[in-house]
Image (tube, rainbow, N blue to C red; front, side):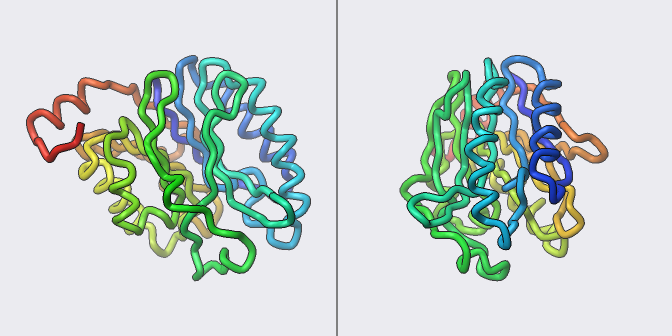
Length: 238
């Protein structure tokens, strides 16, 4: 299994963003877990929420077509009975195998004025292709009680749209999350000017690999690294 962290710019044209994402995914190897930036297909296009939500349905069907032996993680804007959510989707082998709404909205960015919050209880460890996965979406990284809900995961995925002025926070949170939960953390942030541009993969020892100029950073998943750190630095995580 290869972990893949994507880094690219979200433009105003939804179709162009989808094509960028599809092209990047197609270049990844089989047996990959791929994490894209938060709302990477539309951005937080508050003036066109209906269009963004309608496009999400089309995009999901396109992503399903290229998801054979690939785990694709991203968030999209969804409309459910007139209420909008920032929804995480995990797509694998042509199906959506896990989904949940963002549970903690970033009020400084006025997300609460446009989205409805999800539920903390929907944050839990789930399994896909033999990999135990948990998710934290951007601002959710700041809540220590949510870290506990990810305990036991092999990898925590963090699609984000993280502010550039708080880049050191993002780097510190993702690295510490990997050390505390003794697992991999695959973080994907946007290349847009207002964002940190700090997509990365951190291993269970806390070693961080950054995308740099790469649109796709790859790192091999080694389950033995998790077993090793949990055995020799036993903090009760199984």
